[in-house]
Amino acid sequence: MKVIRVLDFSEFPGPRHEHIGPFSGQRFREEVLLPAIKEHGINNISIDLDGTAGYGSSFLEEAFGGLIRAGVPYSDIISLSDRIISDEDPSLISEVRSYIKEEGLKHAS
Amino acid sequence: MKRIDSSRLKHQLRAGLKRHYRTIRPKGLNAVLARKKKRRGKGKLYQAPIEAPAKLDIYSSQNHRAFVSFIELFRQTAQSKGRVFISFKSTYRITAAAGLLLVAETDRIIKAYPNISIKCSFPPSQSEGRYRNAQNMVESALKQIGFFKLINQHSPKLTNQATVKRWRQLSGITTDGSLAASLLDSLKGVVSKSVQRKMYRGAIEAIANCVEHAYPQLRNDGLKIKDDRWWMLVGIDDERISVIVCDLGVGIPETLPKKHPQSLLTSIASTFGIIDQSDGELIRASTYIKRTRTALSHRGKGGQDFRSIVDVFPSAQLSIRSNQGAFTLTGDRFVDGTNHKESVSNFRDSIRGTLIEWVLSAEDFAK
Image: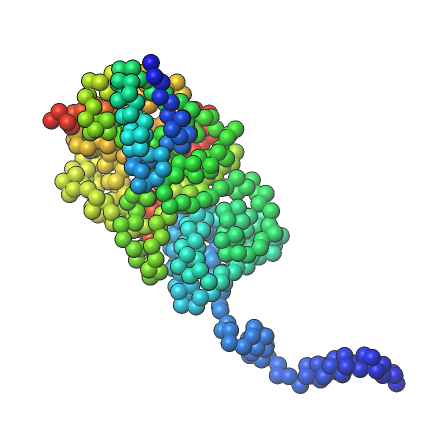
């Protein structure tokens, strides 16, 4: 299982889009998540959210909800959310799930 | 008779002349003013000082009016004269929000007029009586948040007042989390890591909001410059923490109707009892945008949900001030001066920007 640590991307996760500020959710998705999914397969990765300064909700939505917009199947992403590690703030896991579900509903309708 | 010392003759003659002129020069107030003007130098016009208000504060209606008028005069003087002298001699109180706004406005004026001269004066540090400024907190606070550095004026004042010694301020253009985190680092040892992460969350969303939405066009203040910065202040004492993010943009009441469809705003207005289109009510409406969008299954994109701060920290108070309006939300207690947990107010004058402030009480420091 490949563990992707957000801390290796940045200690200071930024805003939604890169043009607003550095280390955005968009960049994390495009430069870290999607290449890892391509290389290892989505069922063989887990995400570790611990160790950073914190997360804005926009970062999380763009990184994970954005996977649906990037064409990754909903069922794969929702199963990925079961492999999110967030010991420091467990509420982040349900928050990420809610973004995935909202975007999934939008795409289903 | 005293003998003339030839080596000191020149000095003695000059001293004698001075004594003579003092006996024959005009007396009275006008003559004194004329001499003062002459001493200031040829070609330099006398610049009357701008009197800062007694309280640098935007919370009460009266103080808000005085502060905004002072800032407007400051800006107009900078535009028309090219040099400004501010007198803080009557100022004995400063709040973090007004301090940050003053720094931001000064920063902007200096960006518009890089060669401007801005100086200021203070009452004696141990003054009594009418100045009521024995602790001289204003000078300490302004030093702490970088006002003197900004105007390039030396201040020997030590920032040892408990209420201001841990104020920190900085500004930026992009949503750079490392900047926000560097300020929040001053909370280390006072609050838990968990609280620090939640403060980071609020700060990064507020800053992103400034960067993305605050500056769709030039600010209508006559300076005609593009200045898309945000300013942030973290203040901490034994009893509470304040985190303030501000911008000098067009304001929420201006951007809200342009950013969101009328149907959404109408829905919010009828659901949450938004009674009019005043700035205060529009700010209140803006705090319902995210949860209303989510409930309507529109794009629930997880944008800033400032309301959630009081869910996380029941002791917290959130204030959003934009243009002429203000909205305050509390967790487990009433907004000062009301028996409600939400309060909307409107002021006569506009702060020409937006200021978001969280105040957290000691009881939530360890959550």
